Length: 143
Image (cartoon, rainbow, N blue to C red; front, side, top):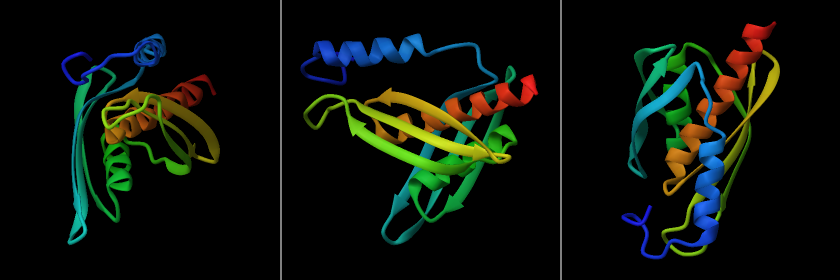
């Protein structure tokens, strides 16, 4: 964190420790993402997700960056989520603040939540979406 941020605060450390505590053995793990967007182009995204130990890639073209990344994740994991709620907040102050994303998705008529913290809003968004998809997969496995 110190390499990316000039001043590391106790709040920064608390947010990152909370992020690590939420880590668990999941079916899906986000390995990488690339997103491209602009006012004159269609947003595109590519992701690499580990799915039950195998690397899978997904891609999408969509109206916005967030939607493109989420659809690319859907493509990689083989499930489709529908965004029901999406909240972004700054954990700390400044241009190098940590971004926390909390979201809810619907999968097959059921609601699942995800949360993540990162320096990058898109990375937080992608990780939170993957967490919600893991919750959906876990519930599906328990049915």
